[in-house]
Image 1 (spheres, one colour):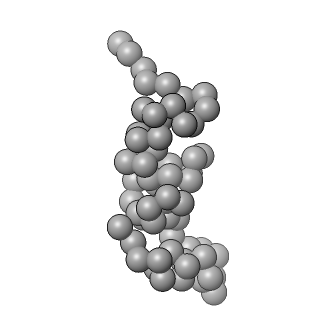
Image 2 (cartoon, helix red, strand yellow):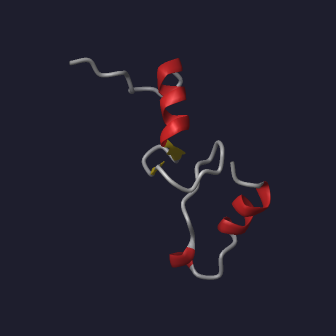
Length: 60
C-alpha cells in the first residue's frame, strides 16, 4: 500500500507526463485499470461484491 503522501505527490507533479496512475482506493501503482481508476486487486474485490455496475464474472 502506498503512503498518503505518495498519492498526494503524484497528483501535484510539475510535468503531466511524469504522473504515475495510482489506484483511487489503495494507491497501488501497478496493475492499474484506467477505465475504472482501480488496480486489478481492488477491481476484482468490488466486481465480485457487485459494486461496479455493468461488470459481472464471466463463465466459460
